[in-house]
Length: 236
Image (tube, rainbow, N blue to C red; front, top):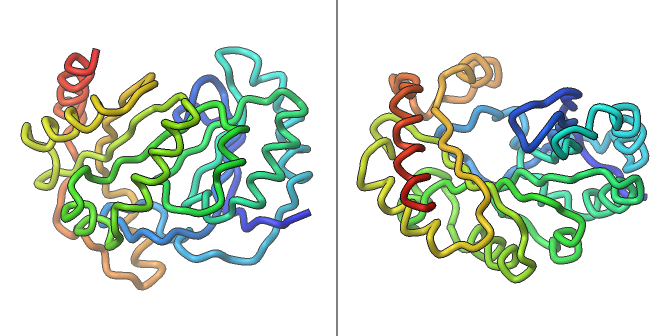
C-alpha cells in the first residue's frame, strides 16, 4: 500500500461538501496563491498515513455521514499530487459506500482512474484569464483546464468555488468573466464565492514567509454574498 503525507484531519467538517464530513488535508502544492491560507501545506512532508488508516477513521464517523450525503473530503494543499495514495484510499472507502468529495485546483497528474471514485468535485477557480491566473498563482492555467476537461468527460458533479479578494476580483468585470466561464461548464450544482480573510498572516510569520497581500483588508462578507447572488442568478 502507498503511504500519504497528511497534514491534519478534521472530523466534523461542515463547509467542504454536503453533510457532515471528515476532511483530510494532504501536503504538497505547486501553486503559490497570493491569498493562500495553508502555506504550511505547500511542501510534501513525511508519508505518515496508510489508506487503511484513513478508512478506519472514516468508518468510526460513518454513522454521522448518513444524513445529507456526508462523507470524506480530500483537500490540501493539492490532493491530486498524491493521486496514487488517493486512489488506493478511495477504493477502500467505496467498498464501505462512503461518499467522496475532492477539493482541488486541478493541478496534478494520473487522476483519470481516481475520478471514477469521486462523487463530487469542489473545483477552485483561481482566475479564468491565463495572465490573471499566473499573477495570482505563479503557475500556468493549462493543468487546471486539463483537469476540468477530464471532469467534463466523466460527467462529474461540480461545485465551483472562487476566493474573492478586495482590489483583485471583487468587481463586476471579474464576476462577468467568471459567469461566462461557468456557463461553458456542465453539471455545475453549486457556486460558492469565498470571502478572502487575513487569518493566515500569523502562519506566514511563523514560517518566515513574506505575506503577499500585506495591507489588503478582509473581504466584506455582505458584498461577497451579493456577488454570489448575482452570479448564481445569471447561471440559473
